[in-house]
Length: 140
Image (cartoon, rainbow, N blue to C red; front, top):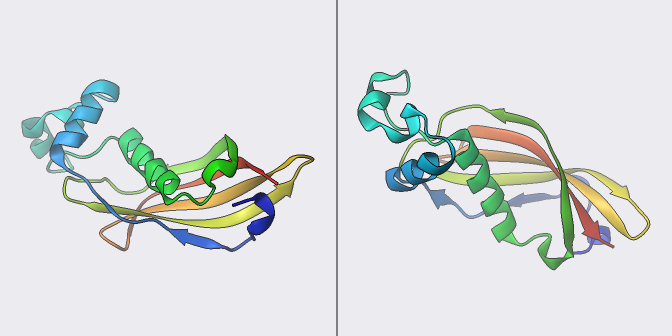
């Protein structure tokens, strides 16, 4: 969709995505190899009582779900910001993630526009695990 087809307050929801232990451990072994992500025995003894996803993994899945929804499609030019990022709750294997996005700001430019979304990730329908503001340049 082109910039001028969007409006402030417009809301979107992605399909869901189920996490699993193997994926959590594989991602973390490459990008965030801390015990709570890769060592099941140590993780069981931690405050989390088991393996949890890396916050970077949770963010990556959130962005994947948003992008796969295809709202911006080929009209996206580039991401311009990721602000006010908060990780609220841990994500465990078997949790089912879904992203809800609301347009909170729009700025017109000469050849394009910038859209800012309030992006929230939830697990198991109603437990918020992540929130951030995502901005991108969109063709007009």
